[in-house]
Length: 239
Image 1 (spheres, rainbow, N blue to C red):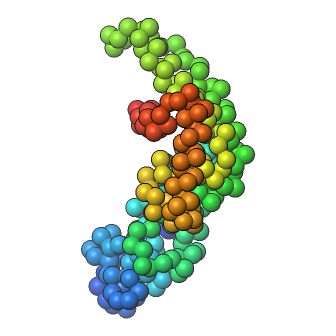
Image 2 (tube, rainbow, N blue to C red):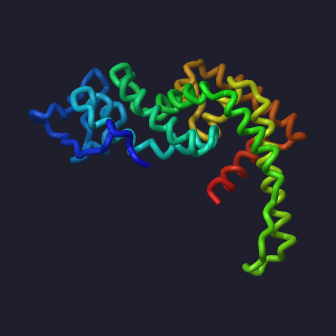
Image 3 (cartoon, rainbow, N blue to C red):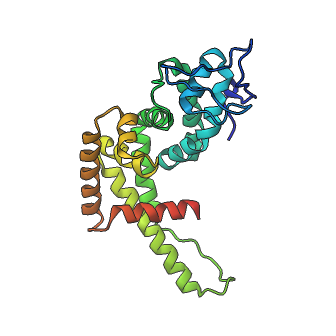
């Protein structure tokens, strides 16, 4: 993954000096970033360092760009994910002085930004999910060659694609607020508190939206466990 031009990584000195890259610990929650490249400091420390040395912000890009890109790609496709990932870090960089330094981990903040950006593409997301639901039933002809009977391989492929189609169609039918809560947890790997921080809502609201989203998915999928389907899709994505 390549950083946007303004976030190209460089080496950051943690020791104090004239370059302004030392982070004094204290009440602002920004403990010194350890190591010669700043890579062992907390996210909050990196953000604080970047106030004086903007290039330090590239450390956060290196930590989280792949995760943000993967999440955006699952929601809108790889091509759109390239732009959304870059825009997420540009916005984060521009808003870094407003970051709450009492929060050591920036992942929820970044997922909140990218989820808001996805919100600007609601129609595209729903259209993509519906397209996946229609197209997933197509199974290409594959030759055998690994010793596994062709019929068994095709049957397994059809089953996997059917699961993907059912999940995509059910997700497309969810209200956006439910889909955001569900996917930032399932695909962003955030816990409830982190999801609440990312979405700017109370934890109780996250729980309520997840409960309703899962119930709607379960009903749409004929009682199938939505959690199991997400696990199946993740295995397909990484297979």
